[in-house]
Length: 96
Image 1: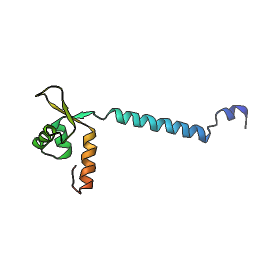
Image 2: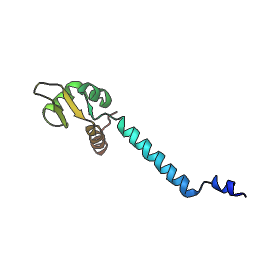
Image 3: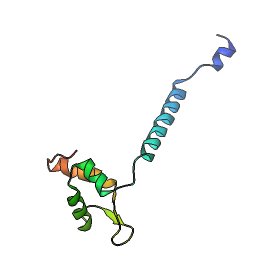
Image 4: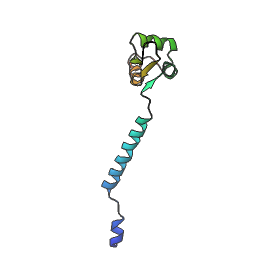
């Protein structure tokens, strides 16, 4: 092997480091694309829960949601989607 060939070798540590960087970047990109909030309509479609129930849950603080001003449209925190799925699994219910 010549000296020039040695400069072109890649070590296992190099590959592991490169792999970690790629995985980290993929996680960052996938998190960036997730919405921070859902509208009641979006939440209803994603969960299969009736729209009126979603609104009722927002008003009764059964879903973590906010309104920019009184009477404004509801914004449901995206984290509620995971919470609802976990509760449904725990209670053996099926949501989409």
